[in-house]
Amino acid sequence: MTSDSTLPSTEHIANAIHRIRDVRVVLAEDLANFYGKSVSAFNQAVARNDALFEGYRFQLTNEEVQALESRNVIAKGCSPS
Image (cartoon, rainbow, N blue to C red; front, side):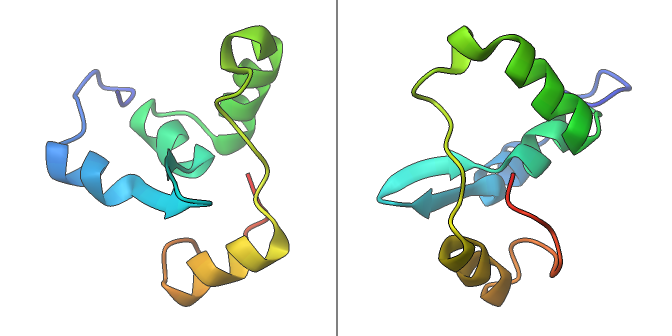
């Protein structure tokens, strides 16, 4: 949900789903955008509620970041989320 309480479209959500390590994932950047928050604020909220997300998140490797960048999924220069 964005800050103006509108829901992202189904197409927008579907486009945010990627397959990494043979698992369907949504990047922190996309989730933060859905909720109208900055990535750092989103990551802080996740860290404060770590037990709720145990097993549901992981850090991308440099190779995975490069693969996503090459597909223009994330902007060049972004650090893994």
